[in-house]
Image 1: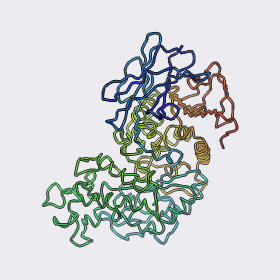
Image 2 (image 1 turned 135 degrees about the vertical axis):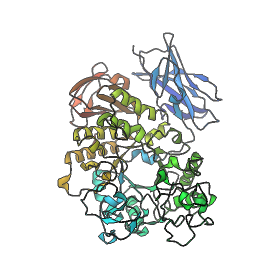
Image 3 (image 1 turned 90 degrees about the horizontal axis):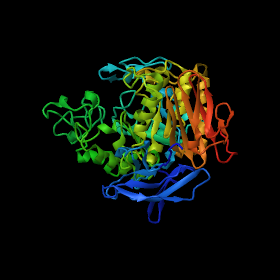
Image 4 (image 1 turned 90 degrees about the vertical axis):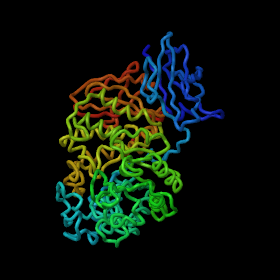
Length: 619
């Protein structure tokens, strides 16, 4: 019999008892284990806790025993060792091997971590406010109204395309009133939470150069307008997360004041400035020697070695991060821009210290505030339960899928990977973090910082639908970048920030309906929100995986290539002859002796489901 065992660090497999924690290992009936143990390192030394065979089901045998925690560490790493016919096997989060797995591939469990559980059930929608909808033309930027980086700002017609190297000074008129007026559209689509790019006072269209952290940009509206937006969203049972840009400010922020707009009290203007130590200077005599983000002069980097800056950003009672978490706004969390670069002076010194401070601040104001970090690359060390709840999952979702389907990497360089590589790239990010954080990961296909996924696919809507199928069934929280759902295109920044095409004649309606169907399906079924994850097939052009919760199962198969036949090993899910249903065509499928043969059309996806209660049907 084929060797197979399953465990997920979730209730039912990992449970708290009166004496601590108990773990369960599931193996198919008929696979007889000689013995089994759970391995952990309670004192930084191996401890094997014996597992005992306990009553299971008609399909599964269960082996159960106590898990010894490492009390000196936030995270306990554990794996399973078992013998079959005197041959040794190991089960880690990376799967079964015949040898001891690397420690960072062991299951990760942080018993102290308090997740923002509301996030699991959300469907996020990212809005670049300046390009979503112009709800109040009276607050629009006018041609030449002021200078940005020495050049006049430009007012653009709504459907004009952004121009390369002109992006920050181009304005289309989108605002908070526009977002509020389009809440019915968002609800029709089915999204439940908004992530807004920066909305605080700033001279640019992207607003990543903040001038005043306590004031909504006047071209977006007022603080009162934002309070009304938050109130209406919450009344509609929707959530809102804002962008926290506290790694750097605008050169025009009063703390810095490069242009001398605020007297002689800014850090650039005087060595004796009260905010001088908010920033870093390579040469104290030369004001131009300040540290800029990526050496960009309009973005001087903040220096968190300053105690006063710490007070202003997170420690004081009226600190920036606290202010917007309180009524009348009561936002539901923060997304922290380039958080991995933040710290004491150049080099992000003591970065983890400030990430922990931010987490403590957010949870003091709201025990379930969502702490989302921006990372393009591996974020494992920020995602162990003491810092972030999630990362923008470019590394662990968006970039691998882009490589697999579009054949390009994040730099637009060509790359070719097979499904086996896709599986590996997804797993290497997933298995190194606790399960609750896997559920919270912010899974995006694209954003304001990347070319649109559809454009990367050369406008191939079949492949786009395939990507969306995976996004809404993969473990983590899906986020739709505004306009993706109607087929909005866009290349590199600023082209990825085009205005939303509100004329429905320009929409890809088939793609839009695909989004709506998948959003409704995910929102209705907890298995896609909190279920375990299991790879099924990864070969060539085809990748298949399952989500499991108690007796509910959802299977996703994607095929980037030509028409193909495959046989899914459903016995690994406990399914032998039970009927499954296709989400897309309603057809029924029945495995034979634990295997399901299906045909896949070229460039297509299939989502099959079986719910324990047959009356539970998708919308």
